[in-house]
Image (cartoon, rainbow, N blue to C red; front, side):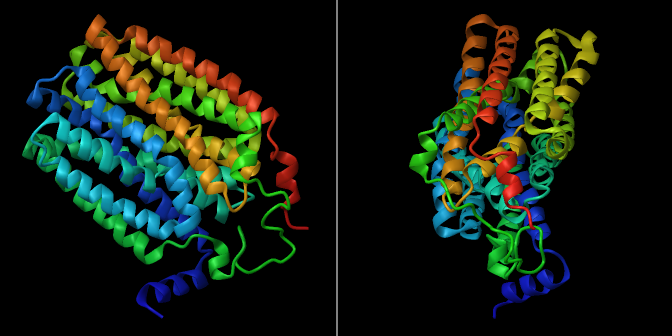
Length: 429
């Protein structure tokens, strides 16, 4: 037995090992999302160095989001076939290599290849697509709460990485800042997952939510969906389109918030602190969303969060100068609290609707919708700004996307082949 197996065995005898997996999911998503969403801070520095327009420069972030989405089905497939530990460790290595090569970029095109492609692949393999599938294997009764807690790591990652990124940029320049962040966070994530991550409770002789085997709990329903059967039902496509529309609405602001605030007269340091504040609010919001979904329902929770998101985007659209600082705080609070708040809801609903040995692949294809939307939003915002010199219309259009998404989510939940009845079927007798 190697050192890692002895360590895992020791931990599994002391605590339910699902909590270790939960902590790893929290940290891994913090690494990936912290680096991904700190692009809005690096964005301003890159603009100054290469001298391209905002549309072309924001395209790096859009390509990153697009590749994250396009690689989501591959991540789900690999999760089902090689396991979470190999996938996450390999993805951390991609983050390290991608940020290292990005820090040496001689041109904007180089950044498209290294940050936009290689780092994005690593972020996908450590992110919510993979972790959502893993965490839902370990928890059932409190699936929404635990998934929300795991996903709150993304917000905490932004909270820690964003101010560090700005501080390191001020001290060493954006290249060294990106190098330091990638090596330290990616290296630690690689080591922890290599030693501790385990895919399923059954690997340790456990069942979800239990410390010992419980034969009377049926782990899978008899009608486990295949990829083909999932693609054939309208519910799948409602989820897909809802995730796409939410991503368009939310990532339009995520890619341009710092630039918009700097245009309004705020300092870069203040703008980066707003990003950090959004990270704090997001961490709280993801957990609160999952907790609420277990108690008042998934659709009600999602609807409330979408209303708050729309309020935040409206506040952002109205910011014109530094005399409206209260709008900045309103934006950071409402948008931040709900940034990613739907992720634990979608993960839980999808796990109930399409659970089975191919859930990773199915969930990965659903994640493609999110990736397409998160790529389209920032790119369009940059192009529209280059034409109109304002973000206002784009932010208002994002609100409409969120409202459409809410209708799609209601339709998906009503037609779900899983849901409450299926959940009750899996509870112990």
